[in-house]
Image (cartoon, rainbow, N blue to C red; front, side, top):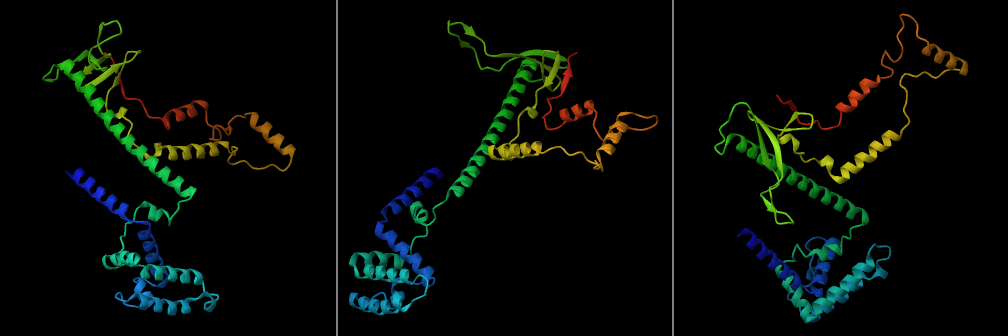
Amino acid sequence: MRVFFLLACLAALVTAVAAWTKEDHEIFDLVSAIEASEGKGTTFYSWLGVPSTASTSEIAKAYRKKSIQLHPDKNKGLKKAHERFARLGVVSSILRNTEGRKRYDFFYKNGVPKWRGTGYYYSRFRPGLGTVFVFLVVLSSILQYFIQRLNHKRDIERVDWVIQQARSAAWGTRLVPVEGQRKVKVNLGGGPRLDGDGNLVAGRMVEMVVDGDGVYIPDADGNLDLVDKSAAVPPSLARTWFVALVAKFFRKIVRSKPPSSPGAVPSEDNESDDASATASDVPSSGATTAQEEGGARPRGARAAAVMAGGRRRKAPKKRQS
């Protein structure tokens, strides 16, 4: 019902916008320009100094008087004097025309519409290339984020369904827990189907192990990988294309910088450099080298740090008994 009401409102709005003619848009332009130049609330009649019931001859007389005041020759050095004078001529033409004055009187009494269609505002605000690029980046990033949310929700539902199927195969349809491990096969590829030769083929059957409340998938090494919701990747703005691209570019710039050795003291001459290098190469009894004090990290420690950082850990594994 709400959708139907919204569509009806949009249809009525489109009809109203389509009913506005080129002359109506010209009136809208003049109303906005006069209020911006002469003050808010200024109308065609108040600018000419005549009432809304003035006759055509009274409007023509007021126009001649006003045009003398606003003539560019009498307003030299005044900004936008030519624009005001030209605008006055258009206003006079509309009010002295029967149909034009009828259209203006309608908006004069009922008010100029605030929403005037996309084309009206586009004629005043023409977005540049930068504005369009920013708009597309923001719009595409928001859409990608919502797609991530939908995929995350779908993955969680899929994991719940797999766990439910495994427990149902191990415990029965009543889902009464049974102690100990039970190996089951779960169909993850839908129901049975016919292949190209017309043979009945079962769906994708996956072997699983149900141990208590946990559901596991055995791997090639005999370990059990826990099936839980942590496998579903949550949505993140950092994984949208633009943020990921900026982060990748930033990391590339950081890596391209030459490494600096902290704590290095510049030598006075080449002989002192050679001497210090020779002294560091020959270990002495009871002395600690720069690497032992933390100057350079051992290879094993560096490898452990790389494995620990930045990567999503796998689901906890359980050794099959």
